[in-house]
Image (tube, rainbow, N blue to C red; front, side):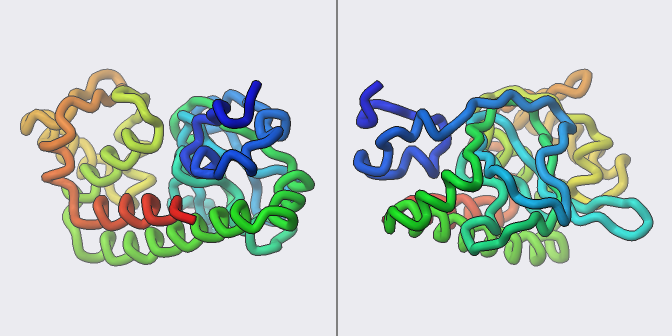
Length: 235
């Protein structure tokens, strides 16, 4: 297949110029991930990086009491493990699939080789890491200042963007863990979003109904993060 016409399905990789797309399809293994499937574990050697296509991967911090808190979400706009672009040899966080789907998996040897030989590839990967850092900082503010309804709308809108499809599986319990709030608060917020015509929700499946309404409810952090990742694709 000609490199010019190859599309990985991952926005970050597909932003590469044609010369950097050469043999890219041979460097990626398409891997299906199931919901809650572990992809990387803290302290383990990094043996590959994942470029989500329509899967959503959560990066979480593990507390001593066993609780987990989401510190990052990665979809087709970026990749996991981002620290590999900074020369790290081991995972600093645990990650797992949040919304089932496909990822393009690249061995760490191949990833490092491309980082070393392609200025554009390295620039894009590091630019994506900067966008991820910006989003993490933005969401720290978000968690402190914005309502559960705004945060819930932001999270669902970002998920729809990242998986590239209008419907995905998501339980109230899982979303509550990701937002760090009580399940009852998420249930109330989801009901409000449904009543306002933004989403449909039934038996653990969210359907994206009206992007304008949902994005209007979402806090400013949705737009700020989205713009950061769009800017990261410019080389």
